[in-house]
Image 1 (cartoon, rainbow, N blue to C red):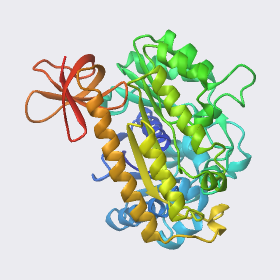
Image 2 (tube, rainbow, N blue to C red):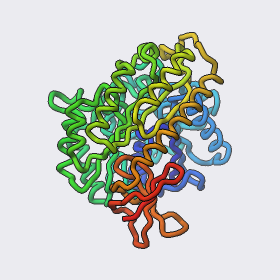
Image 3 (cartoon, one colour):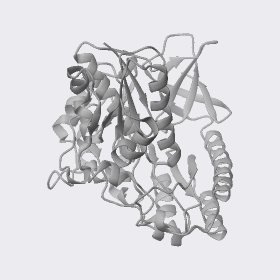
Image 4 (tube, helix red, strand yellow):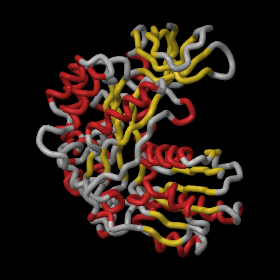
Length: 431
């Protein structure tokens, strides 16, 4: 049986697709590219924006039209939150499986010939994390995600994720260690710990278990493995954590910390739990202890209560703080969230224009950070060779793309690189 995956959305979805693919392979299936002909297609959908949900339905319709004899299975957050919309758009003849059913998809689709119908549980009542695990990197990668947590208890006013993923649930430390050990044996050099809200890790497992305690156990246990966090909230980066990160060689010097807005009023309306001043103080504190740390962030524009003045507060804050990159995107109302019932003070066009301003500023910030790294030595995990010339590409500890000039084969190795130039916000150097 030939099985193909099409994955939309976050790193958690990417990890879950890898894990499902491994389950299919363990039962004798061959994983092929989604553009190739397959017997089974799994579309792992996203619901974080209306555009992502639309793209999910678009892909399902495309596959149904182009591969009429194949089994088509839709899973993920759009399936979990809006199955009726998918049925209305795509029609019958496909299988809808909720997020909690992902560990069963391989066995279910191979056991049942038709594999159609709706299999969606009430995610808010789920108490334990689903057993989706990986033991080897997909397609020979040297970096791999490991999902340690699922769900979210924060209920930010704009966010559909708690309704799609349920309450926070954590993977027991022994299963995290087992995956890291297997991936280490398979040649992986960097693990990205990921989840929906990983700062909540361990709170459901009992006293003494936390994200920080997990990291303090993992890093010394696997000294030749780099560890990175996919994202963490500003309220969860403590002083103790920052000091530890500065002193721990194999913890990547990189934090991705969502900001969402630089307006105190908007942050309160979003139910974010911190102020612009808190965020600014945190970034400067990180930079004080780790001067060349990469700090990235996410910012939303056009939230219903955001005015032009609020947006200028965000611009001013971003200009002040020494971040190395940012992602900016316009607000997308999600049905059932608190914010979806709010009257908007700005148009969609204004939200997009504000996002464009931030993206331009983000490019400037990244350019400045690149120039600050000139002459420094960066530990780069080399991933692959560029087709033309003796150039290799990889990621530094502080999450910058680096082109390494070298004649020897460096793929899969961590190399100390002296940064000599920068071009188009990419670092260039030699071992």
